[in-house]
Length: 265
Image (tube, rainbow, N blue to C red):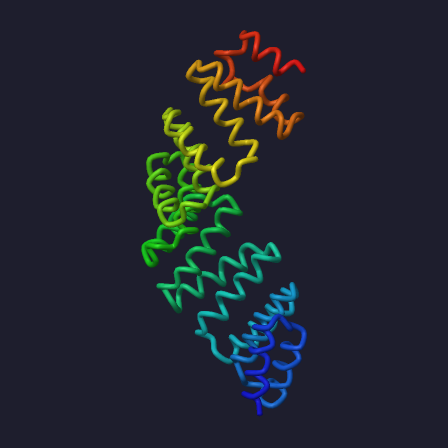
């Protein structure tokens, strides 16, 4: 009977009936307290309900029964991450990788965690491993590019973000990060093209208009700088008026009458 309740729990979970699914897993465990899969799937369902502490307890029960279960370590890591238990999460991802070194999702989430706690170089290594295992892992390429940009490896970041936008041309954050990175390299015209891609996907992304304005201002292209700054200010007046007044990117055009008229509203 245990497997009947277990399968019922899985089916209910897939339908979004998470509370009923937990009850079914509980019945499965009543019939077979050593059913590691039931404990594991109970933990996953508790995560779906946002009950991460209870989920971790279920994963622990599953791991007592099957200590080398990659998925239980991996999901335990995700639950700890949700609770902000960074070291416990990292340890769980490490154990998952120990039992399944080719687990691209464990490497990826390990990278996200390391990014969150400021261990950027180690995050780069984790994301790099994820894309080595799964070369079409678009989110890993994107996050690798972001981490490389933060580390000052702008050429590496461009290469990674190129992969990200190749795999998903509609990922406006990848285009946006690509634009930011090109600015660091002084490649303003290319950055503008990336920002244009962002605006094709998200036409009201105010920060992209502002960044385009900065690119034009740095090249002393006053008309285009004013045009884009005006759009940013129209979308978020208080934020971008204040920023433009103190941003050194506008120093070349700061004395222009049109700039002063726009920023002294």
